Length: 381
Image (cartoon, rainbow, N blue to C red; front, side, top):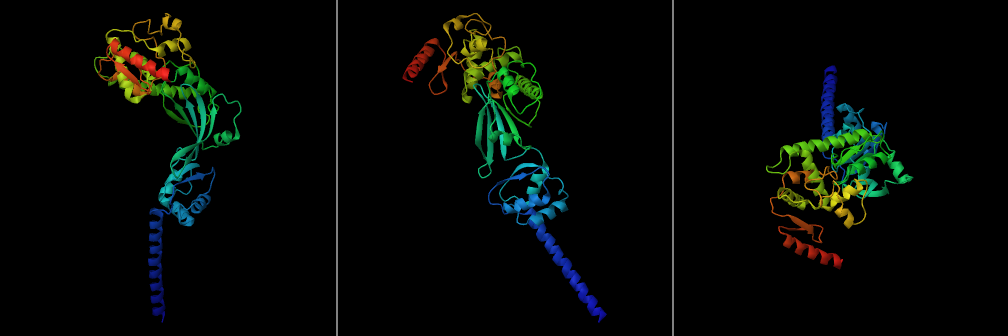
């Protein structure tokens, strides 16, 4: 009889082990397999949130089939105490393992709300944007000028959240003073900006920062990036250019940046100025004259006067030979590359063509015809 009881117990134990193994295998498949989420979501992990709270939230949003299994898997994996607060994009069909990696990896938030601080040539704005998980596109909710005296709740509620991303976007062609002034007045930054950096030596780019980031360190990073890129581009320059230094290339790149916003034209516009330097012929470009008047501190806001075009100043390229003494703005990567690898042309002239681009010419007679056409377009407008 005892043998029979022992045999039954042993049989039940074996069956129990088999069932347990099956349950474990099923749990592993569920934890590592494709999840039930039909559309991407933005998951917010609050500071100090527990694993249970996050798991329940995932269950309510349909991202996991079993909050309990998610918790058990996280504990088995050893990452149950590594939650990182923030807002995270959870893609459709993400497995529990993938979601656990997302919320424990750390780093910058990947969705939710961000503040974009745009430093442009004519304006500086704060933008509050929110990512739509369904389309992976940002939707703008608030836009405010730099000069805002009192920030509305729609801005402050977002800006004061610990996980809000701040992205500073600097446009090509902005001057060092414009960038310096914008950062000095950005409400979410701290520290001193120091002196205005040398013209042309700040990289127009996007910079992701945290609230309270140091202004001086940010300017130093912009300068480091620009100078590193210029040095690399200078090393890769084509032969036969009329420059003796990388600084001279930077000066011309800033002129090209201000003369055209059409990407496909940069190397052609660069070729015009390089051809003029090789003739030699004066550069005769309005943006340098304007910089001589404003020194980069804002926009002129009007046309040039005849007296200004005739004035003897270091930046009046209608009156001086060669390049002005400094850059007139901060050129982007494409403009720098354009002057160090220009298109091979014989063009010496260009004028607006009414489409946003320019008409190019080799001879003065051709140029005069292009100018006449442009005058007709202007009159029609």
